Image (cartoon, rainbow, N blue to C red; front, side, top):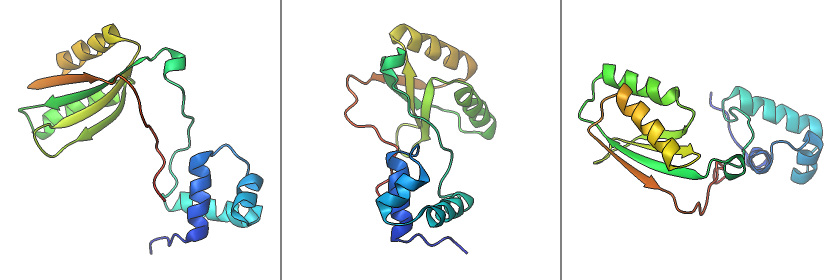
Length: 153
């Protein structure tokens, strides 16, 4: 049986998305409940897989990662062996923040965060030496206008 998400659960999830470092007391006060019921709901949401890994969002520019590239990849190979090698190459590279397989003319899009263009070239050269790709287009983000991991609850 799937977990039913009610309005209180949505309020808890919204509060956690806004700032998961807050105490249970603060979250309970915000949503108009008490600590124990909130803790029980959070535990159930975790067990059901609604709440995944909890982490911290770092400021990339403050840490010197000033360049964000969106990398469009076309490949002429689609067999399982190539895909496995490609996925392994992506997962082993911390510069790759996101990777998506697409429908349409482009096969994959990557979000790659590096210190500068030279660091991107090092990443690119390493990637193409490990896996064969038909075409790679790199687009440099000039300005990040919006970035969030929050879902519209």
